[in-house]
Amino acid sequence: MPTSAAGSRPCVPLGSSRHASGFSLLELMVVVAIIAIATAGLGFAMRDSGQSSLEREGERLSVLLDAARAQSRASGATVRWRTTPEGFTFDGLPPNALPGTWLENGVTAQPSLANGQTTPALLLGPDPIIAAQQVVLTTEGPPARSLRIATDGLRPFAVVSP
Image (cartoon, rainbow, N blue to C red; front, side, top):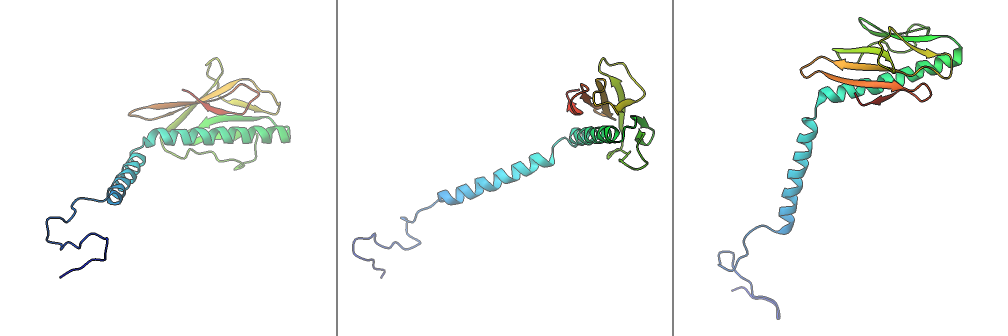
């Protein structure tokens, strides 16, 4: 026969009708946390990889254009950026000074002036102030995406809205 200490509840056998049923608050919180983590993981896995890869290409190109611009100012040599069938090239820099290929397949670029007039190449220096220029990156579809990288001539190249 089960006994209990003075002042406490009497022991109830497991088969008895007074046994508490259901889940504790801690168990419910653990289940909700597991569901939240799984949902977040699914959200990241289903992210639009086409747009994120284009954004990566845009950020990379803006950094490369600014690096070429800095090298042009430091050396005093004229540097031009232009597209090639394999990717792009920096005319006026030593060979292989900067990468010249896209990270992803299917990316194309169109250099132009700030007013939208297309140009065969961007002039990156050696002058510290250059003309306002832009590059529009596009990817093959479906869906086709585009991204614009621009400078006003004073500030560095940056990704701006398409």
